[in-house]
Length: 312
Image 1 (cartoon, rainbow, N blue to C red):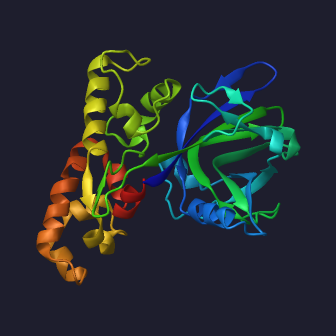
Image 2 (image 1 turned 180 degrees about the vertical axis):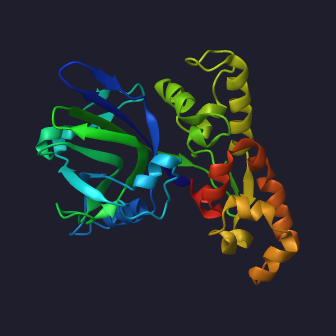
């Protein structure tokens, strides 16, 4: 059995006149979260659980194209502030997302702050955030990153109140020693070709964040403004990806390669670049990954590596 951690978040912005609520969206649990969990299990004296929410400006060119966060991320691209998370801001949830007093495998963190708390005048652009724990302190970039999100640009002004809710769910999944099944099931729905930000938001409002979630929907039940025919098409693509299996040990040397490059190179060429791999093994991998050419959009094919896919 393998521990699986899934996360999602929801933002609410209010000012004196309006309220804007963004639907629930998935977030990426990064590799350093595993190190933090190991330290907590060991009762490491210097380590604690969730301590801060860090908020970042990101990069200006992120506004021009959709960005895919990486599992190997350890800090924000440009952290502007971090907010301490107190014990009463973290609650246990039951399976119906209701707060409970008893320990459960689901957590909800709620952080509320005002723009004026850290904006003296004008505005502050934010595009990214992450939870930090372990040995994290108020100092930027400190501690162990737990999750990471790159989101559409938000310009915070001093009159805005910002509420961010995050949920983490811990569950168990089976992984065969030789073959990993369900590869890519935790990829965000926006990675499916044709979904885009608007449809991803509609799906998130209905609790559909990952390809695994999308693969299990009732194809005859409407979801927001998404046309029924397109919804069935998205579901079919998600099911193709969710059912994908990969033989792990032989292909680890290709973990840093993008899916696009793996599918576009001839097997014999890749075999020359990676000693120890035969063209037959690479050809089999390409056959297994070929469904991604149909299911995922070009931007994600170019940005997602084989390692990202395996660990998603």
